[in-house]
Image 1 (tube, rainbow, N blue to C red):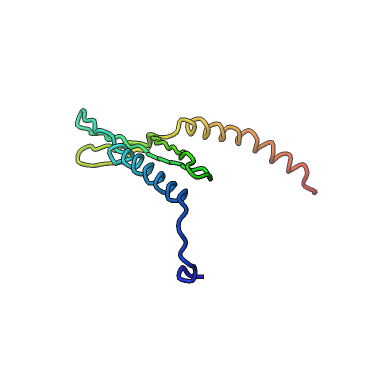
Image 2 (spheres, rainbow, N blue to C red; image 1 turned 120 degrees about the vertical axis):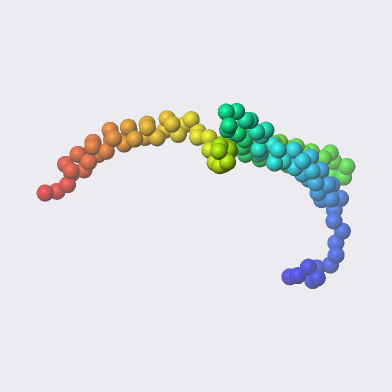
Length: 131
């Protein structure tokens, strides 16, 4: 069914009000999530320039009631997480990601656990093997 097959129907007022609310929220939050928020102020010292890099995310929600004249509700938020930095040294730029502190703990812990459990597992499987 194409759009020309359906008769033109008026858009309910609640839908246009919700669309207007979403548009307002998008404008307000979108203006805050800019490149200046992602790339921080460069810091220079000792011949090295460091530019902080962050991940910015924003979201919003809105709605209206089903009754005529129902209040419009909505909200939104913006969040930022540091992701790394750009290091400029001797005319060369390099991105340096920030590692999660859990990686420094989880990888050695997993290796130690595997080193302890694997020999026990191999011995147990060898005993079950028919000869």
